Amino acid sequence: MSLQSAIGSIASAAEQAFIPYAERVLELMKSFMVLTNDEDLRSRARATELVGIVAMSVGRVRMEPILPPYIEAAISVIALSLNSVTDCAICLRPGII
Image (tube, rainbow, N blue to C red; front, side, top):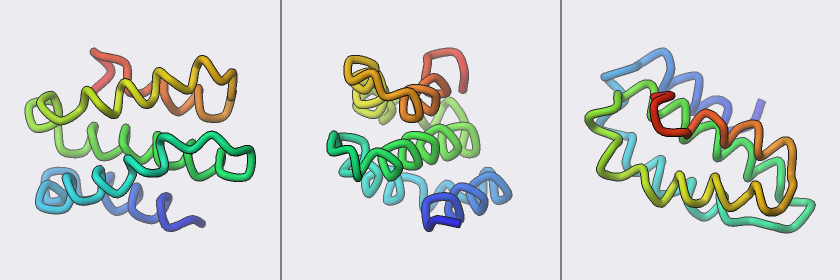
């Protein structure tokens, strides 16, 4: 299990109790969500997935103001044709969270 997966499990279980940690975790994930090297794609996919999990855990109201850059990063992966990352990016579509 990766660290990102573990954090996702905690966020999912904690739900609203994860709010104090959400922004810091999301800020850390930004650097992963822009990686384009083949060897980094798994980390990018996990980061994208984690952002979606955190968004669903803390709720739409808290996420809407800070989510746009993450959505842009998730959408940018579609141009790279990276299926594993694209699959995780789908969860960040507006209306999903």
